[in-house]
Image 1 (spheres, rainbow, N blue to C red):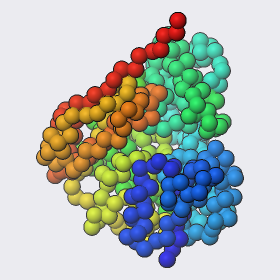
Image 2 (image 1 turned 45 degrees about the vertical axis):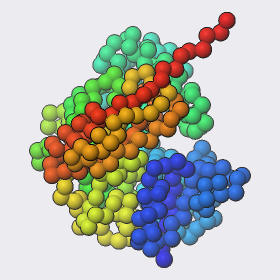
Image 3 (image 1 turned 30 degrees about the horizontal axis):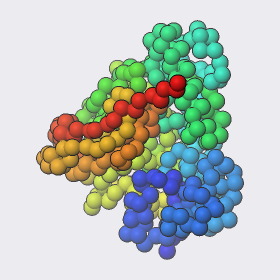
Image 4 (image 1 turned 180 degrees about the horizontal axis):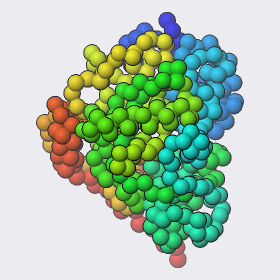
Amino acid sequence: MPRVLLVAATTGYQTRAFDEAARHLGLDLVLATDRCHVLEDPWGDRAIPVRFDDPHASRDVLVAAGPFDAIVAVADRPALIAAMAAEVLGVPYHSPAAVAACHDKYLARQRFEAAGLPVPKFFRVPVTANPLEAAARAPFPCVLKPLGLSASRGVIRANNVAEFETAFIRIRALLGSADIAVMREEQNRYIQVESYMNGREFALEGLVTAGELQVLAIFDKPDPLDGPFFEETIYVTPSRESLETQRALVAAARSAIRALGLTHGPIHAELRMQGRAAWMLEVAARPIGGLCARTLRFDDGVPLEELILRHAVGEDVSRMRLSDSASGVMMIPIPKGGGVYQGVEGLEQASAIPDVEDVIITAKEGQKIQPLPEGASYLGFIFTRAGSPARVEHALREAHACLKFDIAIVLPVMRC
């Protein structure tokens, strides 16, 4: 029975899916999470406790728990620990340097530029810098972004100096918040400034074997992502774009993978099309996050997690193809202002919409929710599967229109 290490966050959505896939394949899945090392197995999963804020110590813990026949990671910070452990254990995986570059937008841009890929004008500044001095260098319109956060968290467009200053101060406060400061990551001491890239946005899911990309899916993002914030909502696959556009996206992703030095494992890429040119936004050394992986089904109904595990243990999955049906997901956005989640109406109506597979509300009653750019979550997910991408998108929007969320406004506390 092959022994496979899965490095993931304690609260990660995909952990259960990987566990189910491992059981189906007859694999011995060993979980490593950022759980408390003092408590005796608080989650009942026999997980190896690691600390994402101390990757070197975590690497040593995982090496001591070896050997492993394969290593898989979910999310950016677990991927770095997985890469460091794989390097010592001699298990095929992306190199630590490549994973680190993926997790730092400045390093990634530098590698793309050195490889001759088209990149926007960019520079980084310390969070302690004077925003007005930084704005004097900005190519308006521009985008300000943290270097190490994902899912568009902290990404803000600025069209002039006043908007730049506001955005800079807002991102500085975000990077100083407790949940990010505890990460103790060097890249969180900087803010990146880039010239704004217009155009349609796409995502690409793939597997890399010996440095070669196998494209699993291309996602259209039909909603415009023009700013000032960049909240992703709808993903639909297969893409409705022309073959020319799809080839350009794949070619750019392949070039980016070579530039970053990624060699073995899943990747998730984000791109924009400007005319006929594909511009790389970023590549993550991990699969698509959260529950979104449920949109992908391959030959005989194989889920993405099973495909990744098969690849990790050395099986040739190059002939696996996406199922014939179109599919999509809506990451249900949090309304402007946020508040305290109280509940939702219309779940039955939304679930009854033709082509809707599932509606999952992940927000909990009494939970304080916050939209982008400071927030890092969604209200839930809607999944659809149909005979065409157009029907998938229509069903997502129709189901979302049925949902009525009760979100209480959080009033500021006044001190006398």
